[in-house]
Length: 244
Image 1: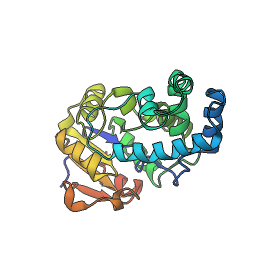
Image 2: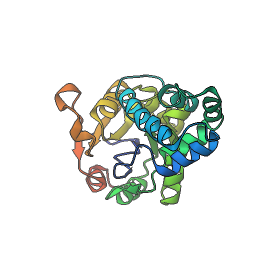
Image 3: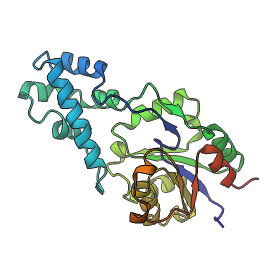
Image 4: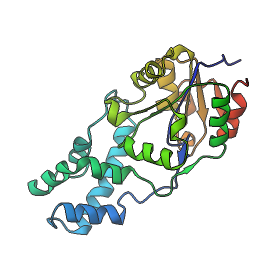
């Protein structure tokens, strides 16, 4: 039996929203980088650097790093490290806007049942927060606002703004503090055993709820703690919530 939660904390990607795989070097971002750097590199060179950087950054994200990288550091470390100094300086100057553009997905859509689950949580008078690792939280915040659900969250905690990243339990503790509840009374909903279930256990959250996504199926269940419940989508989460 799951305990009655005092608050509901939710991951963004794979829980609130999802998108089909995207080109790691979107043409519009390649063009923006070409213009920002004044044509110092060819579009082909930029494309190759972005593609390699995307894969290198993805490998880094799958490691257990307690601290998040700043926007400029991500670009320098994974994309522009071997670029001419003039181009590196230009990217550093525009790093936050470029990070927004790289993080944004025009194909993001709310996962099935999420509006229903959030309405159920609100009816149960549960405060809610977003707790998500991301290159640029502003992109996620803008999507949730445009989707009409951003106002349902008392707080949104994103790793690039917080300076820490899951599974660092500070992500959950910070959300709980901002909501005025104890982490031990919160349910945390994520789609990754490696990041989300581990984070919930380290934070002593009341429950770790695993919502299955394409990422979930790439992880070895035996390598990480078991969640307290597994749901397929927002409808499954709604059915777990207490009714008032």
